[in-house]
Image 1 (cartoon, helix red, strand yellow):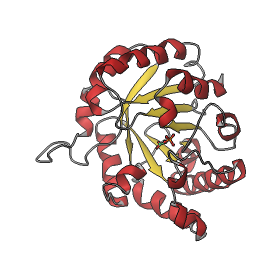
Image 2 (image 1 turned 90 degrees about the vertical axis):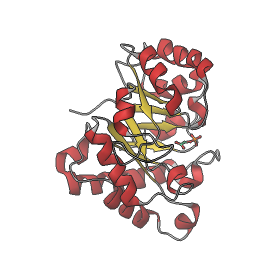
Image 3 (image 1 turned 135 degrees about the vertical axis):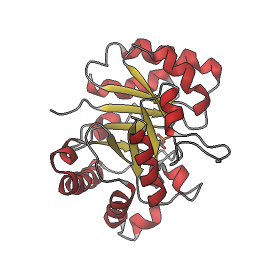
Length: 249
Ligand code: PGA
């Protein structure tokens, strides 16, 4: 059976304790939507416990933005998947381009992080995406194929893996690929997942991410093989986030 679409908000390094009022607005507005789709909010780690407590029984789920590949140990400043699960998270983003590029994370590390997420019972949202240079070089699909092959562990299932296709050049820029480009890439990702994981790969949700807004979500989210959105900037305002989710109303 097909899983409901997933609209996930990546708050990045934004949000203080007072931001729980924004979560309250998402929970309130989400009530009319969560029978049709899943809503996930990924605040900074400092807010995961309070957000998870507030969202309990609401239909809105809370996730982390990154985790270490080890469960515990001498890794100053890092957060492990069991810690996120213990704080009430249900999912974690791994391999976001801001981690891959800003923190030099390799495909192998991303794969280990996804495995750590699974050990802790979390859904791994594995991000992949080409840079503008790679796109211009005609290397988009080969780049994605490599990231998919090396960042996604064996054993992926529709209920433990979500892929987020986020072209690096579209993140935070206001630029988006055309629906035809999104269709080509998502169709390609679907094919690779299907070849590797069979019927589970057929059912894994493939999110689009990168400058998704209320004004452009309808044309992107209705493309074949787009199973939802990973939303950055526009997820910080409940009204915009809910406006995007409302595509699936
Ligand atoms: P954006 O970010 O929506 O602000 O472009 C998306 C993301 O990085 O997940």
